[in-house]
Image 1 (cartoon, chains in turn green, red, blue, cyan):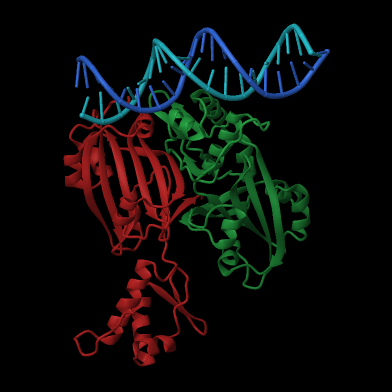
Image 2: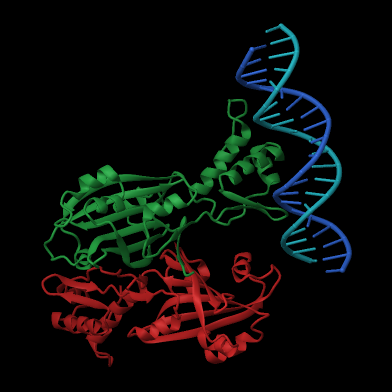
Length: 242
Length: 242
DNA sequence: AGCAATTTGTTCGTATGTATG
DNA sequence: CCATACATACGAACAAATTGC
C-alpha cells in the first residue's frame, strides 16, 4: 500500500494526487470507475477530507477524473477522439486536441516489405521500401506506435528528409507530393505483441486498435502504407458524417 | 489430446478435418499461423499422409486454410471486411459477403438507459428507451453482439415489431422512418466483459472492436443508439474512400 | 411519495509551516 | 528576531444531489 510523508517538503494533497494519478495512468483504476469517497480516502491516507478534496481538484484540473455531486468521483473517460476522414493527417489531429502532443522517431530501414504491403503499394515482390517507425505521445503517455512504408524507388533518400522534418505531410511535399488522401482504412482489434506492448508502455493484455491505411497521391498512386497501433483504452476513432 | 476412431461410420479424414476446424474456430490456431506439416499430422493422428491431405483439402474447401506449394498450410486470414459508411446497414453488409449469415434475437427491455446513451439520443435523464440485444453469426460463429437503444416515447411498442421483422431497417420503416443514416461511429478496442465473452463464444482475453454509433432520421433526430462488439480477430472495419 | 444514507459542495474558523523583507 | 503574507492542513456544520428502500 502506498504511503505519504508529512513535512518532507511536498504538500500532502500533492502526494495523494500523484498516487491517484499514477493508478489511473497505469490503468489500475479503469475508465469510468468510481473512486472511493473523499471520506474513505481521508481515512486511508490519514488526512482531512479537505486535503483529499484538494487532491481530487488537482486531478479534475488535469482532466483525469470527473466529480458528480451526490454520486461520487469517477475516472474520466479520457479518450482522444481521433477523426478519420479522407484528409486525415495524424499529427495534425493531435494539434487540434488540447493536449501536449509530441512525437518520437524510433528507426528507419530500407527493406523488402511483407507481401501484403507490397501488394497494397502496387510493388513487385522484390522492390524495396523505406520503413519508418515512430511513437506519438499525448500528455506524456503513448497514444500510438506507427510503422509507415514508402516506395524506395520513387522517394529515394526519404528517411533523411523525414528525420529532419518529422512529418509525413511535409516529407512527401519535399518529393513533390503536395497533396494526398486516404484511400482506405482497415480497423481491427488485437493484443499487442511483446515489442509493441513495450514501446507503448502498456500491459500485454490490454488491446490495441490495429489500423492499416493507404495514402494515395492525386493520381491515385499509393505513396504510403501505414500500420498504426492505437492504445485501445485512450483512443477512439471517430467517423463523422455531417 | 484429441483422438480419432476408426470404423465408426465417419471417415478418418472427416474426423481430422473436424478437429482442425474446431481448433481454428476456437482460436487455438491463430490467423496466419502455420499448421504442422502433413507428415507431422499423419504421425500425430496415426494415419497415412494422404488421409491428412484429404482432410486439409476439405478445410481449404471451407476456406479455413490456405496451402502454399513448398511452404506449408496456413490458417486463412478469415476476416470479414465490414464496410462502414453513412448508409451502413449491418445485416445488409452480411448478405453482400459470401457467407451464411444468420441473426439471433436475445432479449428486449424497456428501461432508462445509461446517461451517455440518453445524452446521445437527446433524451432527458428519466426518459425510457427500448433496449434490444442480438447476436450475428457468419458461417456459424459469432461475428458481433449488438445492443440497440430506441426512444420509447417515439417508437411505442417497437420490440414486438422487431421480434417479428428481425431488422432495424424494416422495423423503423413500420414507424414511418423510411430512411436514416449514420451520424457518427466511434471505434475502440477493449477486452470483453464476462457476459460478452460468453455470448460471443470467445475467450475473455481476446479483444473486441467496440463500436458505438448513432443513426438519425432525415431531419437529423436520433432514432437509434447502437453498441456493437465485433470479434476482433474475424472482423475488420473498412472505411473506403473511392 | 417520503425518508434515510451517502457523497460532493460550501462556508465558516483555527492552527501550522514557509518564504520574504 | 519579528512582522507579514500565503499556502497548507484540520474541524465542524450545513447545503445540494443522488440512491435505495
